Length: 338
Image 1 (cartoon, helix red, strand yellow):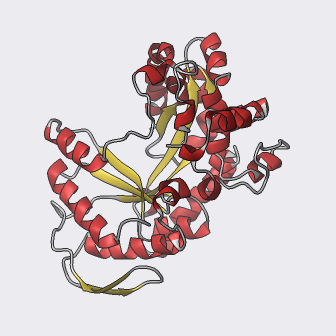
Image 2 (cartoon, rainbow, N blue to C red):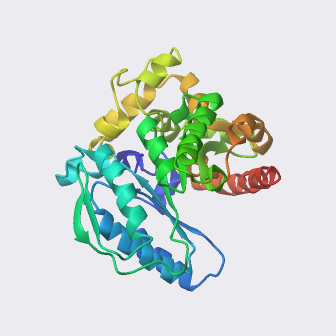
């Protein structure tokens, strides 16, 4: 989890009284299988999954299995992972980007064919490797990529079914940059003779969304939101571009340098106390549904599957009802655009 468990304490958030450890997640695949057995139309997103700890053949078998179990209602999201998922367990992230480059063409084969594959990648290899379990129907489960950089964007268009990233912080709080990156994905699809209009463009919209302005202010004052400003930008250099000073410096990189479970409460609260207030509106969309929707307009021009995360709900049980009301209103506004 992005948020260090050391600050999931009742004096900072009442959520801790019912959810005391934000790292205590069940494995998603069996939960999807259980939920799929009880539903008929809901889609399930599985991920983001890192490609460092799983060979593409294992992922292909899992994805095709879930495709059967769910009745073709599962899509998956892949990424190259972060050190917080690996370093505590003695797993090296070295070569993570190369593993992502290898994984997509291998999955592209195994999700569509049970013919053996021989593949010589930079990190992953196969010698007449076969995944006999095939998708439920003619179409394989969709595979989206998460992350940034030219290689990832082009890979998403060439082999993937779409692209996901969180906004606004990962895109420098710049909707024009976001739209240019979407265009790179689509141009790569077009170059591979694929239909760019079939790609799923999925911005993960980070918000502090509530119908009471005093509750919005209360959420923004919470250490969770200060930490969010650090954890939802790729590096400290982003603050520098905004004319701000990052508590850990411009060279700090979240994926490489941050291991939240290793951070003490004192260390986290000290960093949070040094987060410039101006960083918060750069990293989340703030306000009620109308305010957030107005700011979102340029970000949604090419979006097909926007998703909302409301960080205010992490700040306490007392936020939940007001958050739900505004989330429902914002979802209704976004749906009218589609």
